[in-house]
Length: 305
Ligand code: GYE
Image 1 (tube, rainbow, N blue to C red):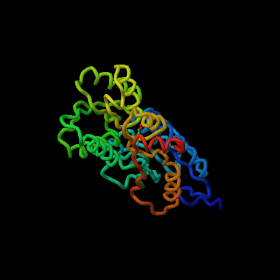
Image 2 (image 1 turned 90 degrees about the horizontal axis):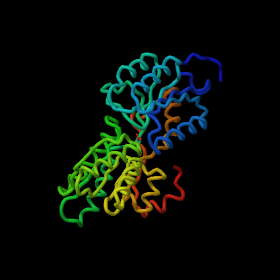
Image 3 (image 1 turned 135 degrees about the horizontal axis):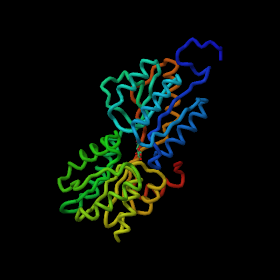
Image 4 (image 1 turned 120 degrees about the vertical axis):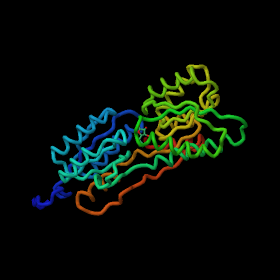
């Protein structure tokens, strides 16, 4: 580098420092995402300061404040819930530190509080899940009782995956969500809630889980109750991580809408541009697909996570 430190953001010549406030380690998706971000930072020569908020907003806010105090060049974070970020985002803005939202969004009305949002279209994921069920149920007559395992309450992927799914299943009045509760995106949460559903909710036909991990927890509960997951009760999930894809290939899960956790390279690229004052799109959407059991069998051998 030239040693001239006149630009506020540091710039790549002096080496970029990124503060990354991760949600937690709640799921296989999150583990893959964390590893990818760490690997991509290394590959890009970006100095990464990483914190795990254990799914608590107050921890994320604390982490962001500490990154502001350390005067990092750029802050990236994956907001555990959608609401309540305006104050801390304003603090970052006032300190001249750009913020990149990765994976999950915020509902702040003032979009100048962040530089860009990189992540999936969660509404579309929910729609894809619902559309598969509409098609799969087309031949069956009578009610289809769905139980829903929601992600973390107030999280963008939980709100949006519910919205998209509901919009899609509205096409068939036989499809009804009869119970819906949060399992916090964890396997143990999914198992516990499913155990309660199996006790309280008669005639469950379908489980719609907002991620693979909760679906995998539901499988354990269904098997423990002496039923066959994928047959007696159909299971639809979102993510397509290894364990989910394995269960799908075995017919224990029936359909998965993919959510791509490999955001690291794109994030580092956006960070370099933002720090160097270049224009970036306000929204970068991840490319995704869906998987049936047959497609999972084909994809599994080369799947990276
Ligand atoms: O689907 C879930 C994780 O925000 C897209 O969070 C992410 C979600 C992902 O816990 O498994």
